[in-house]
Length: 487
Image (cartoon, rainbow, N blue to C red):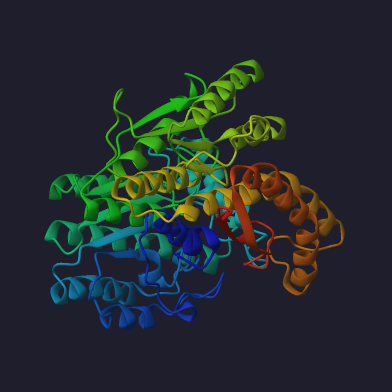
């Protein structure tokens, strides 16, 4: 989808947990941040692949058609070019009919990428997109809609509308290709909608209607999410190659958990997670469970403490536990710290098979489910490298817990006080990265020394970077290995 850690590094790490290897395009083709990737170069690379030993092809439609997720939010790529590039999947299928193709694409979010140029009208554009999705606007809403439209420059408005129209055309083409047999599996996800209303609702309706007409609901899914889908698609491809799907159970920290609403998504938590479970074809059972997903949502403190006591007991007893911590929904840092703090206090932080808590419900639950599923696959077939699970788990603690909760807020406050835009650091990137390392490094070492070293792990590498010249995400490069036994 692009070259952020979540979309480029995480799928590799997830696949490694079950012993699979990904062949990625040359990095220069993927582009970087607002610079689009070389979609035509990717098409040539794709059609020239040596498929010897290749078990599946996994494709981000946004990267192939437009040059990445950010590029999908502008109309810079003409519809004809997008169609030609997507058509390369049909050509690949004709050349290599035994290699199944797994594709994930997105429905455009309501708010396009923020840039210094768009900052003045971005709120008006997002408000327009939300209100324009109303099926029968009232007279007052019509007046408000016209007011928002006047605040948006014509060029920005038509670029936005054109991008949405082109993107939904591409998604419809992919559904048709699934019906024709070129695409074996397709997931179309709703990028951060931030509202249950908006232009995306009619677009989702168009796609659902097409899926119904073409009768491809068994291999095409629509759900919330975006950045996690590289991991999910890779995991599904590995599952299908192994012909095994781990039975799971889902344990919410409170009965009202499934009904909670993530403010960045347009569906409740339970619906989003159910969509991920369908995409991974995971059987949900009350017995003979292979993987248990613990979903932690904002809760009253006594309830959450009791739940975390039960969770740490299950980890201590050796159950296969993946954790999706969604307490960020309530933006309550004291609750957001409780999960990792409880695991560390119980001395079991190095033992869950997966943990994630980094952006939205789909992002976090998708990461935990994909990594947990790959661990189950690796254990079942004896192909799991011993350090891959621990390495990814450690990275998630450093990123999702230490950086997101403990480092990023004060880092942002200091940088903004000195006049920096934390979403576009520019010449301040090097200083910001150095400051981030001074703050995050000791926390990362403390997590390793306090939780992983006592469980028999050594560490030989730790790198910390701001990969997109902004503070929103950090890249963690680490290397863990089991201690060698004494002679």
